[in-house]
Length: 81
Image 1 (tube, helix red, strand yellow):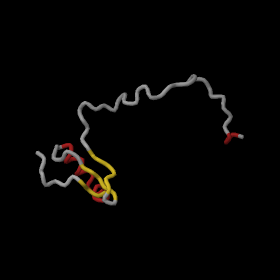
Image 2 (image 1 turned 60 degrees about the horizontal axis):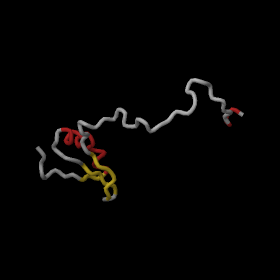
Image 3 (image 1 turned 135 degrees about the horizontal axis):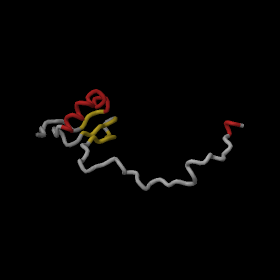
Image 4 (image 1 turned 90 degrees about the vertical axis):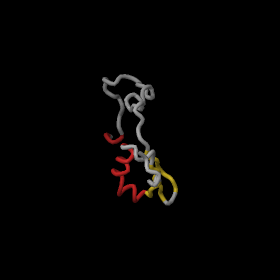
């Protein structure tokens, strides 16, 4: 159960000191999110990962292969001259 008196904004130094505690609070659903500030300006937001989010395959199709990856490269490096 989320407590209404739990602060949702922390300074970057406090975040560094309490990082594991804040992550545990989010995992236990005690908080919806935490906003991390630097010089009183928001710089990051810590949120729980949705069960539907997947990191596997998220970059699929963003890279292409040119040429062969098994043949030797015919490039003369400057460091070898």
